[in-house]
Amino acid sequence: MKAVSGKELARFLERHGWTLMRVHGSHHIYAKPGSVVRISVPIHGSKPLKTGLAKHLLKMAGLTETDLQ
Image 1 (cartoon, rainbow, N blue to C red):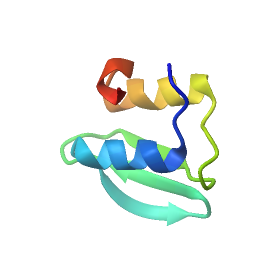
Image 2: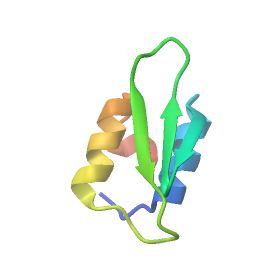
Image 3: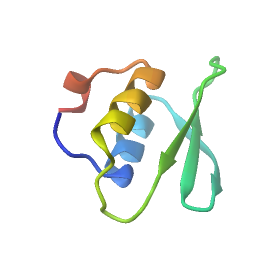
């Protein structure tokens, strides 16, 4: 999996129907209409997310690594 920053992941989620609900510190909370899932994306500038966290967030969103590329 390629390195992805929190900003990039947030933009990717928004392109796939997720909307920003609120911001709590450096974490942006996303939701999708009709879903109970909430995704908290840490935004720390252009610093890349750790691989395990990025995979987990994508899995929660119902997306795959290939969707990201």
